[in-house]
Length: 369
Ligand SMILES: Nc1ncnc2c1ncn2[C@@H]1O[C@H](COP(=O)(O)OP(=O)(O)OP(=O)(O)O)[C@@H](O)[C@H]1O
Ligand SMILES: [Mg+2]
Image 1 (cartoon, rainbow, N blue to C red):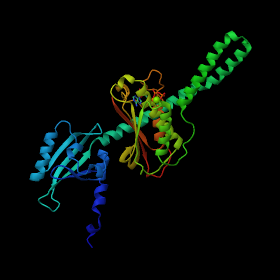
Image 2 (image 1 turned 135 degrees about the vertical axis):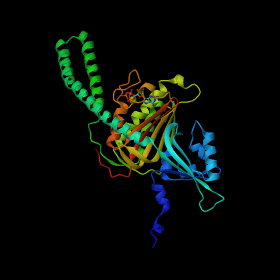
Image 3 (image 1 turned 120 degrees about the vertical axis):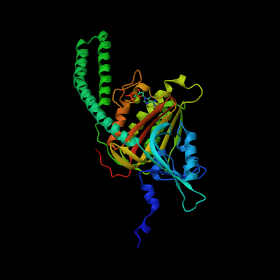
Image 4 (image 1 turned 120 degrees about the horizontal axis):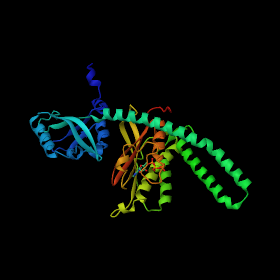
């Protein structure tokens, strides 16, 4: 028997790491494979029939691209571009791509086959590994400092109480009370710096459950001052995770968004503050050097002023803050929890649109680090 007859070509095309697009002669999308869905963060159903130039949005030379594609369909001459910049979800990505004519057995209705290879991935992996290493060193340093701060505090507190008792004079109470309350404040800070001491306890979690918990907390706290929009994919599979820790991650990120929006009311002259909670499946995500075929993604998006540009690159590092009374620990703790779950958080931010995306792998059998 001819072995090629037993190959399921659709399966093969969907498992290619090259992103593939098929386009009709009007330059509308006819088909895209799984890698292409992941690259553009769009499903085949949503993309079908859309103009390909909407997807391959190349800000500089749309006209030339259109001409080149039409020319390839007409003449059969392949067209190749290297290091083209395309814009996906307001993020520039770089791709090499080739467009060629595909007759599909019908010479009068040729299709255009576009193969895209993103070239950012290698760049991104090394940047991420570097970041994770640095982040771990910084966390250890912080924990060390927090321990050293905490150790003498119990002694100072006890001695102050003894002092207050032996002075036994109300006019000194004010001073000893200040010492005690400042010591307590410092101890709380040190506890936050140390992070959770509990090991994660993993169970199957429907990601919407902690997300809804956080949403109701935020609704209570903001009393309808912020529009909260839910955009959930309810077909998402459950993930192995520590439910309480996920709540902490989402709460830290939502708290930042709420603070950014409520602390800058002048930014909202023509529109209302808005928080969008979005859940999706995201295929082909590299986390700490491991390519995950499938992940659950949670976006927490706000329309506030955005992360200050000077801290955007380092926003996940401990003690990095853009707020006068921030400690700069919320995101570092959240990222740490996600790393323990073999996941990660990414951030994209411009004024008016800030998205923190959480990624959790769901297919791998889970082993805590
Ligand atoms: N959604 C957002 N919009 C604008 N800026 C943000 C947003 N999220 C985070 N930031 C910026 O990132 C900084 C770091 O956030 P992080 O949660 O780590 O610390 P913090 O909020 O300053 O303090 P803490 O969370 O420890 O109380 C914030 O101070 C803020 O400047
Ligand atoms: Mg915070």
